[in-house]
Length: 179
Image (cartoon, rainbow, N blue to C red):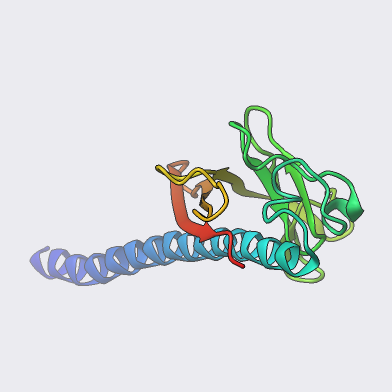
């Protein structure tokens, strides 16, 4: 009986550790994916700012609800500067305002990327929601001539893991209207 008990402890201990390690690995994978989704949105905002400046547009055009000639095929983009924030699809060069909760990102398993394309033919709903908020001006900076302008970009990714625990990552960065 004692031998069986010792053998059971010798088997159950490592199995328990392996199970906990696997669970931690899955959570870590989701956190890493969330971080890269947030960084993708920040990089897109930076790219739109740079493209706007090189084309002579207002620096946040396409992100503040005004057109810039490329975002949303030249029409006005989503207002990431509004209180609800916006969603950004960097591959399609589109933005859309959010009212309430932003829509869930979909995963395109055919091409292996996240998108807001409709579900179907290789595109499945993921459990990641990405919200982009841009606040400008920041602090005492009022965007008048000679003082420059600064915007705070905040990207929030939320998801529920396998244990239905709600998780969130927030990536923030300040961008400047450069000349």
